[in-house]
Each structure stands twice: as structure tokens, then as C-alpha cells.
Image: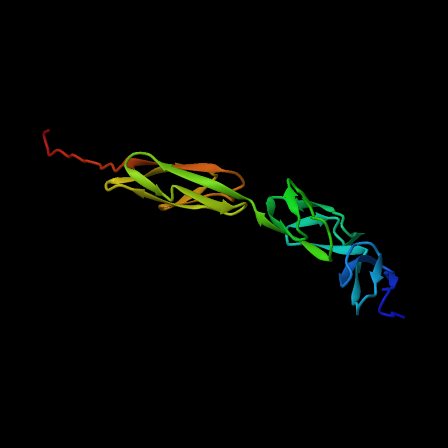
Length: 210
């Protein structure tokens, strides 16, 4: 009892349940110790808060790549965990996000873990640059284009007036009319077009006696 002259003190102890940790007091109490002394000189309100002692980190990899470990990981509260990010052949890492982490090379390390979260990785196909050039008396277009790995590039070859396409080479392609289609592109490459002037035949004939 409080007789109005002496304020009694009590000690409160916060006991977490299974799988939980004490995280702090709120209200008229404060501190991070699970035990706190309260002087009952007036009405008091003290609330103990708790948090999980472990968190679950779920890896999610998009198509054309993987995360390792590949299954949900149970880790201690306040710790970090690293995942190895591996793209499939001819793909690269597009982005890795989640859990306050960062990517270094192909290793993604989470931030300090205080709640369940997920790590999400996405991947993109490799690309290559096809550069084109034309000799005198004609043009080729486009002069540069970026294509996905394994795709083809299409070039339009245009001779000047009174000229024709002599040859187009590079990137393993095939010419059909004025369209040059490369083979499936697996590395940066270059195509080159050359042109030749039209030629004409002059035929001559002589009459009798000469």
C-alpha cells in the first residue's frame, strides 16, 4: 500500500515466450534491460515489447538464373546472410534487391536482419553490338545496333545511282537483294558493304567487204 508519504518500488521482469526476445520497455518505463525498477508514487503504465529471436529470409530467383542457398533460411535476429547469384549461360545479373542488402560481384549480402524478408534476383540476356560500314558509292544501315545473344541483325545495303552491291561480308551473314541478314550473333561483330559501277556491253558489226 502507498500511505502518501513513502513511495514503494517494485521490480518488473519481462520474460519472453518461446522463439521471442525482449526488445525494450515503453510507457512510463524505459530501457533495454528485461528487469526494471518502478517507483509507485503515482499510477504507472509499463509495456514490455518482444521480437522474434530468428527471422526467415526467402530467396526468389527469376528465370535464367539462381540464388544459393535456394531455400528459405532461418537466421538469428540481427545477423546477415550472403547469397551467391548465378546467371544462366549467356545471361547476366540484372538486379538483386531486398532485406536491405547489397551486391558485390555475384555475392548479395543482406543488411542486419530484424524481420522476415525476401531476396529477389532478376536476370537479363547478354547483348552484342553489330557495327556496319560501307565503301564508296553506297550506304549501309543501321551503322550500329545492339542485339540479344543468339538473335540476328538485319542491314539494308543501298548502292548509289548506276552502282550495285558488290559484296557484303562479316557476322556470317547472307545477302538477299539489298538486305543482309547476319547469322545468330554470339559476339560483337562488323559487317562491310562494297559497291561496283554498272557495266554495259557495246556490240559492233561490220557489213560486207570490211
